[in-house]
Length: 245
Image (spheres, rainbow, N blue to C red):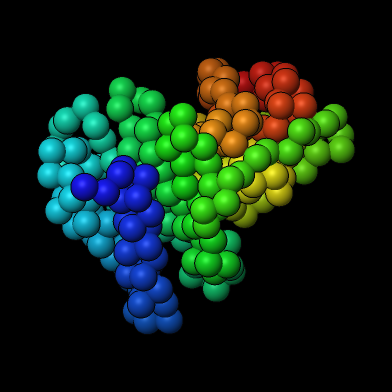
């Protein structure tokens, strides 16, 4: 039987192939919670392809998908984000990904994140490191926040009435799991976003942690911040978002 990590990699490849077959066709785009939160036929096609594979390979595991899949109730649960960065996909901006993570009791065990535009496959398993295309990943050492490259995506429905400038002061169009993979790969120093869903957080959380980075959830009301960063930048980012809850 394939390992959970290997299965996650197969799953994101299957999802990406399904989404890419839809590109340029009739995508039946609908708005969900905000103008930046869209769903399309490509999202559904990717999720369906992934769910079909996971059900065949792990029939006893539960599966939850961003676009509505809900199967089983076991302690082992696969979270599926069939198309992270739908706005970018629809506009042919090469910054979207497909992400899958296996978690148990809230702890991620294995994950894969595929960047189809660049052909890069990121994966991790607990206590077994993080890799890109089979090569071990390592976060940057990090440094002062004033010198760091930090990513965030401040969507209106996640800000819950807080003005973007007051919340953070920097905006970016993003795919959360892909940018967290970039933290793990040492491309950027840090990532922070408020009120994140599990399928947007747990894949990248595992990648960053297994690549030697630091991760945290900073609770607050109305904003709970999710932070991942290089060790030398982490504490400053946590301090920054702690003052904006």
